[in-house]
Amino acid sequence: MISDRFRLAVAQLNPTVGDVAGNTDLVRKARAEAAANKADIVLTSELVLAGYLPEDLVLKPAFVSRCMESAEALAKETADGGPALVVGTPWRADDGKVYNAVALLDAGEIKAVRYKYDLPNYSVFDEKRVFAAGPLPGPVDFRGVRIGLPICEDIWNDEVCECLEETGAELLMVPNGSPYWENRAEERMQVVVARVVETNLPLIYCNQLGGQDELVFDGGSFALAADRSLAFQMPQFEPGIGISDWTRTGNTWACEKGEFAKLPDLDEANWRACVMGLGDYVNKNGFPGVVLGLSGGIDSAICAAMAVDALGADRVHAIMLPYRYTSEESIEDAAACAKALGIRYDTVPIAEPVEGFTSALSGLFSGTREDTTEENLQSRARGVILMAVSNKFGNMVMTTGNKSEMSVGYATLYGDMNGGYNPIKDLYKTQVYHLSAWRNAHLPKGLQGPGGEVIPSNIITKVPTAELRENQTDQDSLPPYDVLDDILECLVEEEMSVSDIEKRGHDRALIHRIEHLLYIAEYKRRQAPPGVKITERNFGKDRRYPITNRFRDRT
Image (tube, rainbow, N blue to C red; front, side):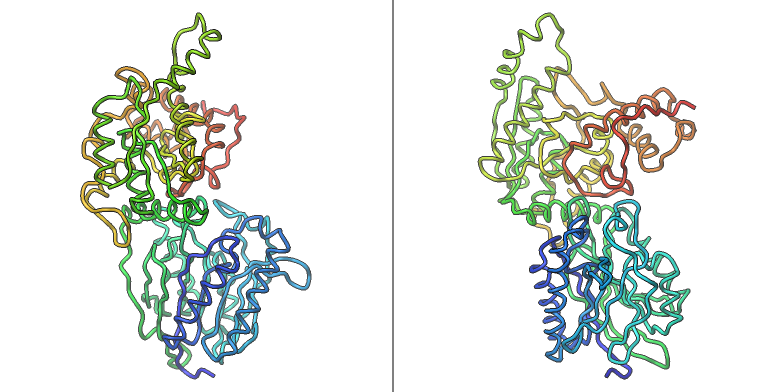
């Protein structure tokens, strides 16, 4: 029995959805490290044995059974007298329903199981689809300490924590699967402060780490004492085991000792999220590396830098795919970028395949003028070549389109949209410019790329162009990116009316045009590869608009 002291290990782990054996081994190793540090209990993240988000895997009975069997196996291992485990897992109850659950494993047994009460069904979450909601939980007994185990969303409203406090909980340990987006850490802190104020109980927040398809889980686990002071803070974007000592004075538990990591600023957090999302997608899906078209433009350059930071230079292959409109400046800039990053760089001219397509279509196109059709043949020829290289050597094609261009359809299906993953899919063009300059001045620790100027300054300062015809620039078809991005953020992130956007100083006809382009490009976005979520409303899980849609805001 614990009297007035215990040592807690918070396991900030990077599980893989569906890899039950691998995830169980991660927990097992974390427990061994905690035991070496003489911890009494190990707290892990939400659904750690399944990986999060498991989505419709939960509807597969064999998957749920495997997770439960792993929990039972881990419980038996706690008979060694070492630390107890708090693990998240899907759980099939006697009533046949499947719950998002957390189990306390100690002394060779599953001592208690608690179910998630508040199932999120907004933004990227769809838990009501696959889980049953549990009842309001009571605390569990851990060696004489009454612990509340609310699960993630359970702390975003007051009901669960108030119930736990009223039924005798002495502190709250919360397993979380909280994904990253801008300023998310501050939002979590505000929620935890509110729960601590309401219950007057310390709260320990353990968050998942790692990339899962479009989502990145940034870790950043922490605890607040009952007086709302920060008890400990673990880093973002880094795995690890956080050890803290807790003592009881009267009826109040306080953290005596814990680490205090410095959290990254917004630019570094966004960069690291893009890098982690890409790296985990490539590694967890078993690709040996990535291949991308390096055009001499800023989008492909930033993607190449992110890929090197995530995977190392030896796993990144860049290919320049020039045509008659490709400038010498672009060729020089692409080569300089590849050299700065230390990556393999090849040149594959596309004149022959483009002219082959043009020749094959000459009969059908006879009597018509050249237009974007011929321009898109260049992009599609590049896409075919990159996919062929991927098929031959196994590297995943990395897509390089930004959110501004994807918003208005300034991208070519089966061309520059080809690929398996896009690290900048949720970055507006202005953010791409900003982060490119930021990365040239910073190298966050733990990343595999070189320091210094990895994106040549000329790429950042020159006028952006797709180079699909003579003297083309992006602004031939689009407004300046600072204007475009502000309108898009109003339409996409804020769902503002045209009238309200006009009040910000934008031309009404331009707003109508951008809104129209946004809606008619939905069919393209449905066919785009996944990419890292950075903003509050990414294209994909967050924003689900119909493809067939005649609504336009003309009030």
